[in-house]
Length: 466
Image (cartoon, rainbow, N blue to C red):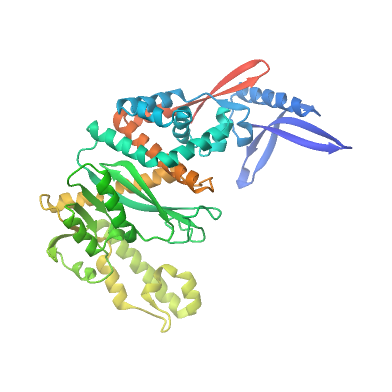
C-alpha cells in the first residue's frame, strides 16, 4: 500500500483527494485499487497532514508498505546506528578514525552516511539529503574533498591493513570492468568494448586492484582503452605504493604482452599471467597433454577444466549443426544477422563452414595456459592461484548489483570519479566487516531498518525487515 494524491481542477480551483491505494498484477496487468479515502481538501497545506494520516493508517493496518521517492521527504529514516557504529569500530581498530576525521574535518558525518546508506541502495546525494534532511551541498562538497584526497585515502587504508597484519603476502590481482553513462558522461567517457553489452553508450574503464583480496586501489581510464595498454602504467604506480620488495601480480590474458613479462622479471616482480588462447603460436601448445613446459625459458602451465570443456564442445557442435542447416536456406545477410556469434566459423561468400577455424577453436575450449616465474610452487598450486582471480570478478558483481555503481548521477568529472571511489571504499568496508565479524553478522546488522513518520499525534516508528 501507499499514499496517493489525486488532483482535479474545476472553475479555477484545485481539489485534492488523499487516498490509500494498493497495486496488483493479475495476469501480468497492473491494476491500482483505492483502499481508503483519507480526505478531500482544496488547501495544499492540508494535503501534507492528510498524507501523514494516510501513512499512519498504512502502518496501523500492518500490510505491505511501498516507499516512493516522493514520500521520502515525509518519512525520515532513523540513522542505521548499528551499521554506523560497526563502520566506526572498524576505523578505530585500524587506527584510521582520527586521520579520517582530520581529512573530513567539516563533514565526517556525511562521509559515514555516504558509505552506510549505500548498503541500503541509497545511491545518490539527492536521495541522501531527502533522507537526512541535511543540505545537499554538504554531500556535493564531500565528493569534491574525496576527489582531491582519494589517493591519500587509499594509501591510508593500505598502510593500516599492513600494520595490523591483514596484508602479508602482497598478492596483487588486477582486472578491469566498464560502466556506461546514460548521457554523454564525463570527459573520460568514450565508446569502446562494453562488458555491459551497451556498445551504444559512452563508458569509462575501471581497473580494480586487490591486495590479499582487499579491494584497495582503483584507477579510471578512457572508455576506449584496451587492458594491455593499461598494464605498465598500473604496475609502475603500484611499485611506488606497495611496501614490499617482491610482490606477486595476477592477471588474465587481456593484459598479456611478452615484453611486459620481461619487464616484470627485470623489476624483480613475481607474476602469474594467462596468455592468449587463439593468437600467435599459443594454440599449438593446447594440442599437447603436457601439463608443464618451457616457453622462451619461462615456466608455462597448461590446465584443462574437463567438465567445462565437454560442455563447450557440445554447445559448439550444436551451434555448427544449426548453422549448417541455415546455410542451405538463408541468404548471407540473414546469416550475418542471425549468427553474429558464429561468423568466424562461416565463409559467407561460399556459404560453407571453415573446418580449420573450427578445429582451432576445439583445441582451446576449456583450456588455459599460464606463464609464471614462480618456481617454488607446484603446478596445482599455480593453477589454484590463477583461479583465485575469480575473487575480483565477484567484487565487480557486488559493485554493480549490490552497491549500485551505476547509474552515475554526476556530470562533473570530479564528482563522478568520487562517486566511483565511494563505491570501491564501501566494497572494502564490506570485506573488512565480513572478515572481522563474519558474513552472518553483517547480514544481521543490515537486517533492521527503522523509519519515523511525524504526524499530528506524534511520532510513529516502523521497522522493516529488508
